[in-house]
Length: 456
View 1 (cartoon, rainbow, N blue to C red):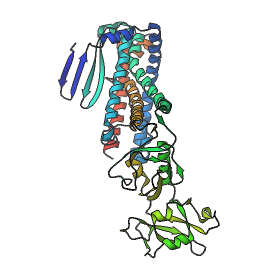
View 2: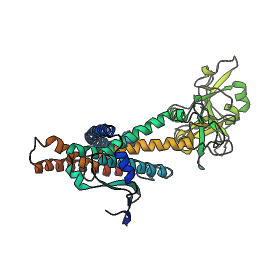
View 3: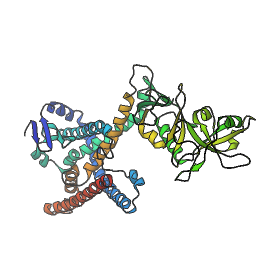
View 4: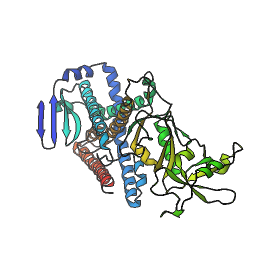
């Protein structure tokens, strides 16, 4: 039993008896409730052990299918994915990632510790470790006591960790769902998406772009009441063809100027000078010709115009109007972003560039002294806890060497097969073979998952 700090290559750990009294007070609190609580956890842990094998098997099949078909678009459909900081986890999110891992680890070990004390197993201490860069926690239990109790009592202790991770994930999900109600006295929602950050290289950066504190209410004719609307509107805009704008025929004649029409490499048509930052080539049709092109100053042409798909959409006010559509490269869109009271931002580019370089929040502060970042921090932390605590519950339940699943499986076999397989040695052999298969399944998922993330 070594208390204090110990350091070895790639591993640093700190163990203490400071929290023993606290653990003992928790473990002796309401014995009947704790008995019921950890009994439910035991059932959950056994179900999770079988479920984790099914889930890992399904994930492995999905990964192999992706490798054979080489369809990276479907990669996000997998429930379990290997996370590599800097590759598929942004560096800016590392604080959330490591904090969520540490919280999940501590809650996991608190489950083991409290359950052990409830089952009269001596609790020696609690500790925190860092392996390479990954933080975690552990509890030190008296092994002899652990071996003397019944297999069912052992199961309550061994399943407590994954059970607490599951509860933490559910609690985080509830907080995330109720966040608008929890923060209602300080923040209101449903009025737009509040800009919290615009990256320096963002196409939305500039004197007529978006600024921190702006409230986006519309993307084209798509209403934005929060971040979800912003994402769905951008997705819709990128999938559909470019929308047009109604322009008065007389105004069209007045604004247009002669330009040379030529085709780009992708087959689309350009009719403005490449050096122009304010003019955009538009296509339209009239009664005589279905393919006309005109170079117009974008802001003057469309700033106050209604959107349209055909000329018929513009025939509302007995004034001859035409539907003009920006003639842009494939995948490129002209998007009118409304963020009153400022003038509309006109964005030309791929909609996803806007999505990746502008951070927003659905929560608008009721008072100026309130932080615009606080709801985003809580929201993001909850999402990481749901994801990582859930993953920890699943992975730890796998019947694999050195994981909780190993001890859950051994105790489960002792509790269920003792009458069927009388020889303890034979039961241990069955357990060993299952652990070997579980370890191989987990290793295959990790290895292929890493290859999918890094090598492709």
